[in-house]
Each structure stands twice: as C-alpha cells, then as structure tokens.
Image 1 (cartoon, rainbow, N blue to C red):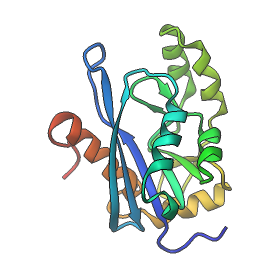
Image 2 (image 1 turned 45 degrees about the horizontal axis):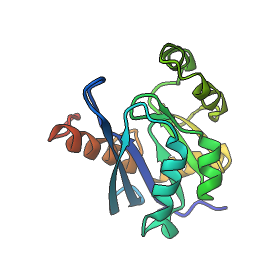
Image 3 (image 1 turned 90 degrees about the vertical axis):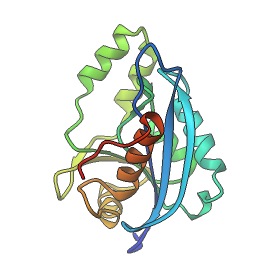
Length: 189
C-alpha cells in the first residue's frame, strides 16, 4: 500500500503513575493528519500492570468514531500501564492496520523480561518475544512494525515527524497523557 504524503496516524501513549498507589493509568490517543494537523484526541484508562492490554486497545481503537480514517497506529513501546504488554502482531491483525512501535533507543528485552519474572507474570514473556524486530530509522529512532513492511513503516513514521525526532501523534499523546496524570506535562520547551 502506498504511503500518502499526509497519513492519518494514531499515536498512543500512557501517563505516569505511582506504583502501589495508582489503580489505573491514563491512555491517550492522538490522531493526526501528517505532522501538523490534530484531527482527534481520545482518552481512556487501564489498570496498572493489568492483563489483556492487546484486547483492550483493539476494542478501544476499533470503537473510536475516527477509526475508519486511520492508516496506522504508533506505540511508544510494547508496554503500557506498568507491565501491561501489547501483542503487536495480534493488535495489527485485529485492527487491520499497521502497528509501529517507536523508541528513541534500541529496546532491550532483558530488563522487561526480568521485571515480568519478578512480578510473576510469566505468561506475558511470550508477548515480548513476539514483538517485531526494531530497525534503526533515519534520524536515530528505532521502529518495529507489524501489519506492514519495514520500509512502509519507515515512510509512515517519516511522514508524521515534525518538531522532534518522535512522530508528532506519539509526542502529543505523551504530553497529553502526562498532563492528565500530573496536571501538566513535562517536556523540553
């Protein structure tokens, strides 16, 4: 599928929380057309270290009124709400969309696998091993993609970069999620 010059992408990120204090975490989705036009914002919540994150996200995104316009989903990692782990290939399959996991640094599975082991969440370890292999993109980001080719994923990410290295839908989702959780975001001005 050719990548349009201004794709409609949904960036999803979670807010900060206090382990042992917070019961749930804000999850924010920001849909943008290209790098400079916000089309929609959606907010939900998910339990800290909750199970079933993939099914939850698939149901939430699938029910959004703007779902038919989406051409891809961007995640800021394979975890949300602490140790909730996304099965990236399954999420892409359920949504029928490319799902791209974007990181500033090359992800290392060992710390996450150790955290899951320590928390007794052994069943989630397989989800980590199913995550798509991250590839270095122009500009220094790493992206792993399911439901599309690595080349198309790179073009989608590039088409929605603006102010920072991060794709704008993901950057804005991060800022809004932090503001929902803390009352204001903390980012570089």
